[in-house]
Image (tube, rainbow, N blue to C red):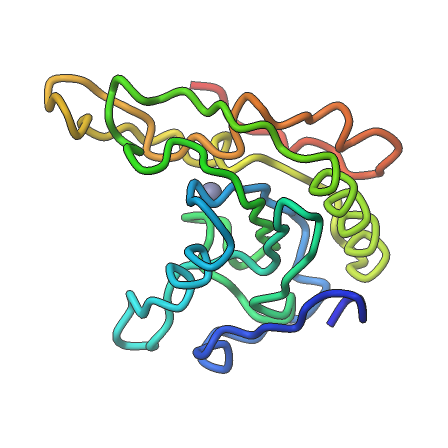
Length: 190
Ligand SMILES: [Zn+2]
């Protein structure tokens, strides 16, 4: 565990996730759960989606609206949170409704729930601890910047919506990054 004040709450399949060295980690990816609460996010995280390995999708850390940090996966294991970037990254999930429950409805693409001051403060603390603990950690990105795939809207197949929008426009990047050494990951523009 990174910090004794965190809630150590490993997912049931955590031992099946691939081990890695700490110096393989160069990137933090910021997500929001797009779910109503932490309990629901836990249910989603526990779901087995990959039958061969008996694992599923989750971040490493979950930050609830009250600022409590819950560790679902140790950073020394690869979690499935961002297509194509899992091996080199730590995934941090903030509890926030996002587009829930109409994620792919073309009429419901706004993300309107603000992140709480407690969440942002806890996130900054966690980022600073990760920077100290992980020697090659240098970059940070939002999930939306790393996965720009579009899919057909659930209400109208002729419309396209983004599969991932998190953490979205409510996320206060400037406040989060102030004084930290992490740099935005350079990404290809399309
Ligand atoms: Zn995400």
